[in-house]
Amino acid sequence: MNDAAHGIGLAVSTVIFALRPHPVTGLSALWIPLVRRTRNPFEGSWALPGGWVSEQESLADAAARNLLETTSVEPSYLEQLYCFGEVNRSPDRRVVSIVYWALVRPEQAVRSVDGENVRWFLADELPELAFDHNLIVDYALWRLRTKVEYSRIAHALLGPTFTLTELREVHEAVLQRPLDPANFRRQVEKDLVPTDAVVTGGRHRPPRLYRYDESISLVDNGPLTHSGAATHNGLVPSKARSFA
Amino acid sequence: MNDAAHGIGLAVSTVIFALRPHPVTGLSALWIPLVRRTRNPFEGSWALPGGWVSEQESLADAAARNLLETTSVEPSYLEQLYCFGEVNRSPDRRVVSIVYWALVRPEQAVRSVDGENVRWFLADELPELAFDHNLIVDYALWRLRTKVEYSRIAHALLGPTFTLTELREVHEAVLQRPLDPANFRRQVEKDLVPTDAVVTGGRHRPPRLYRYDESISLVDNGPLTHSGAATHNGLVPSKARSFA
Image (cartoon, rainbow over all chains, first blue to last red; front, side):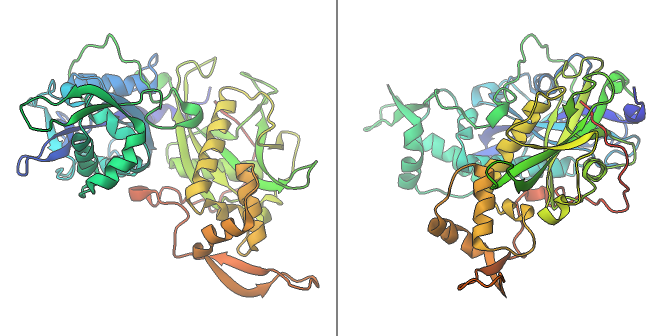
């Protein structure tokens, strides 16, 4: 056994995205939950939820546990983002962080409320975070926006059924630009299955509800097909923590 | 300080690709150098080159050092592939491996010769490797093939100038299918700069040499622009090793 790695801490952190209304415009926007650090380094700063990797837990399980502990919710999508390991990213001790990113559905996101040391922030209006966590969030946002363009990932931010307008608004919230409704419909239609249901509420022509064709996967991860799917049952939310 | 991570080893491994002629067809094919393990677990098996992460070395530097130690060459492209951390991937002790993938140019690849414990293999005809290294190579091949379709990555497997036929043969070797020469030319032309040189050798219409427009980057990694560029100077090749 080589002891060279023994001084290096190994942590998992998670960038969690959910859609909630923007407080000013009322439009759907991306939000991220952060935890306030209660000790040094960076005591008092906001940071991504995270923790040390424990010996008998896979990396994805550790990420899902972080998520559950911070927000009390289970993700509809969880994927490894990147491993951050610069020598001086934590001031006290070298910490290598394997970072995951997760998407949470609205019906799950409402279960997570702000507390003293957990708060949801608009993803594009974050304060200065601890460690290199601003860079990490920037990269997660870039990955999400890139992936929305070529995969069905937006699905994971929606409930099981939705209107075409709701689906377009998710894409607009992620990409931060308006999309032409007719072009959008043509692009997504092949992946959608119309349901028999419509939105109720007395409108003259109530919009139809759709669901995704679940025989097609959200994202193609090639030989790592199973790596995005974390098992995260039986975990009980506890104290929120953050790590480098 | 939390000691939970102290039993977990932290390693870096690298999947290195270069183009060399296929021994039967003579066409360009992808090759990978592997190292033979000289101790347990998996003593005698072939494995990816790798080593423990040392305290004062970034992850990309450790990957570049692996590469130099194994093949005596410097990569033209180096990118983090994925972090593999399943609990039981190494039989003796938990090892989390941050894996990089690298592309090497032909003029560099000829500097690397097979030795007793280092040998180049056809990427699609590997033996059963140690640990989960077959899965890792499969994923690296999938990433390379996906990336060749939408980025200029093939460049990193070629010399500074090349003919259109040579460039198409690189794409064909990576994608393992023939490409229509006229369509291919239309797709890549916008990224190419014709040089004044032609291939010499007395042919009636000698083919023109091109180079890539270097103002465009090989791959768009968003906010992690610098993460693909390893600094790997001043390292001296030594004993090849492999880790989980």
